[in-house]
Length: 557
Image (cartoon, rainbow, N blue to C red; front, side, top):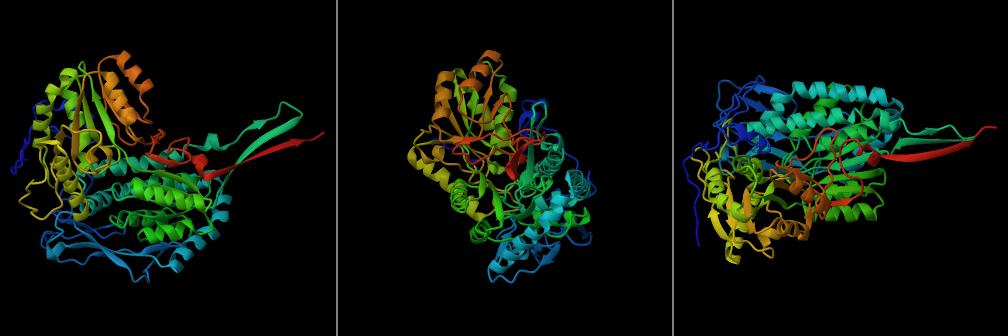
């Protein structure tokens, strides 16, 4: 069986020039570099690299110019609950460690944070203060609530260097990916602040009977968010819940909890009243306790398919509103008339950027007809992508050793089932970080639809290359897949693009671009098994999820 092991040497490869990198979903695969320190601090070394700044988890940067973080024996950040605008040390007996994804096996920098669970009493307290604060928060009115959110944007923007540094260290993001996440998160707040005209309701006064509609907040809303975008994804739901007059309890991922501390600090500095925004930590048990709280009215969840089903079912049984976004197997169809250079850059950036740890990553490339001849060039391009840390890195580490074992397990089982390994990222070597959770770009061919690697979301830098003869076969392949998160087509034919977007049964479609999660006023419209619940998110059609509608008919003769 052919096997091309990824080179251990770290090289930069720019066969197609700089221009095509724009289509690579914020992962630059070109000779263009970002300059470190543009925001006042240098987050260029992800995790515990050589950056002179360290994140204290509370929204500020601590200078440490005399010591290299590579050799600093600093204590791990201790995460607190955030209840009623106060940081609370949990009394839970269940604590977990967040390990540095770059140096998980090195004693000096093994732990980056200690995360508590939350006791039942602490979760009850968070919900109680949110419930108590909600009426006064709603009574402030839309414009005052919007002013608080705009202040929040200003505070978070000042924190951007610290947030970027924290994302690089705790999640292992590249600098470009971390900056993009902060930008999109702030844009979500701006989008939520733009919904005023829609919330005005409807008034029909031309008939003797007057008809009016009003939108009222639900009460307490909760959000459960994943490790992959720990700053941005909470802002998919939190601003919309707050702008409509609700209060929020956030349960961030225990794998990447520190970004939530910036949100806590920022809400205080932005002048939010106590109890409006709260944070509890923990695992699945904490989520279950939150959902079953009678005061909680709505649940927003983003995460794995298995967890989404459990959350959805529990919320339904508890009579809560629920929207759960989960797994995806995103296909990219390449037609013969596509632009070869930009298409290959787009596929590589989407499939391998963020180490494949995003639900919008392109995990299946479908080559139509003669475009199968492009696959060797794609392999060369993927092999050249810089794996490691710092400004020049294109692919960072996976979140932890469990994720690494999961991804490599998928690769091994794919080979056992008969897939052909064109590029093997399991043996990638990063001399500076020999124990890091790194998996390099991996490309599989000869994959059948019954294989595990095709049927399940891998959530790593693994791309399946499939070959078909016609566009009709490609559409049929996509429509038979259980997921409906996103897909893309690469073509120069407007006729083919229109036919594709009309016939394919996927909620989010890209033409000549690999999709990223829509932000700002755009809405996410995934379907099939990629979404459970009601009301797609976010954008201007998102806010009704957090409101009840009242219709009043009146007559005054």
